[in-house]
Image (cartoon, rainbow, N blue to C red; front, side):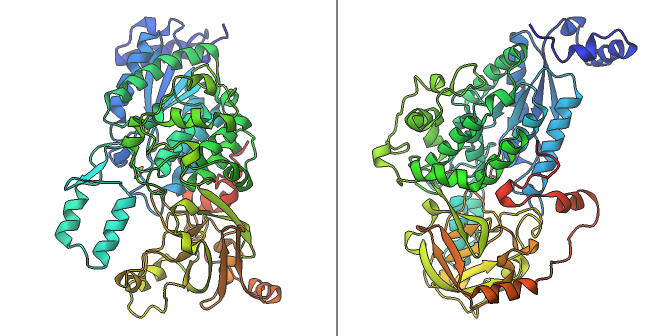
Length: 559
Ligand code: FES
């Protein structure tokens, strides 16, 4: 057996080896815990500020049971947590900070393996990025989705339905009292959002990459099987430590190709493009938006979950969950990829069974023949943009219209409800300065609210374009991640109200109808906005964040 990493801390002849043990024993441990037991870190993103992860202390206790039972020594530790709903300017601005916290916490401590407890959107990619860089054996235990929202007998998807109902309130079709009642019904338990938004997508990506036990991503947060899976993960972590099975052996290029395929099959969030590119970058694997595009062309979208479809994560779990999707997609996957179970991804799903073919469709009845994300190129987005066409209005996917431009989010918020806003159903809303540097922090502002005057006329969707991201729970004909972003001098910066723009989703193009000389002239006159931060983490972020097509990691953190 290889020498355990923790022995460097506990078995050396120096004073500090003795004192480390003495100080740890202040917590009441016997000397036996140092008896060559693998030390298993439990990296917990619990926080009362991150409601989605508020149950992770209970999950950690279940992991500890498993670690003790398998002969390990569990030690739980906190890191920064990222609250999607509360953090300003955007939780995305702090994903890299959390990844650094996770990486250095693992590296600095006497850990032989680590169990990563995550859930809310950014906590999963941050932990995977940190664990990939530390490359100590690791296993992910997602917190699982919350219970489905329930209002007067009707199921509601957190995020997706919340946005639709809020639009009804804005157009006067819901009272304040009704909205307040709904506010108490949308998020009925701990756990992450109930639709196939970014959190459900990223925990599914962790499973598709091979970093969780089989089926772990889909189990609802309050379900007893969540804790059983956590206990089993604790047991398995001890074996991972003894086998020295590291993330770099699991998260290979082929594993990322598997994850992209599953992302398309589940109709995953557009944010997965950014996060998977960033995780891969930590391992020296170059992924680009074109990899997603290539896989998307050959992969059907089969999971009928909101925002692309009808159902919620609880229904997905009851239908058999992600193992069914993986089994159905095996012809498109690298089935030989190793996973944390010690078996291949194909072996893991041998016994998977589907219990509801409305929720997880057969390939022949797919929701769409191709995956959910289309990568666009054109003179408005030379380094790509993305659109989630499965959550868009089909009649707008091929569209030509005049731009109405907001220079930033504040201007948009000040004008969007104005009865005088000069837009109609053919207009294209363009919003600038919402990218990684411009937001700053690449906020999820891309689903620009529908103008109130159009909502009142019954118009539910128009084309919207920005360099922002969009919540995975959102929907609409929304072009995102326009790269290079406007604050970095990308062509989005030179769009003016009245310019004509053509969105050609089938042809994967996004173009502004201007002669090249006019574009060059306007670009030459561009002046970058004043930086929003001159010190601290904000400055580090602005100085080093990469663009969306490179995953928005810091340049100095990639392998
Ligand atoms: Fe945490 Fe949606 S707010 S997953």
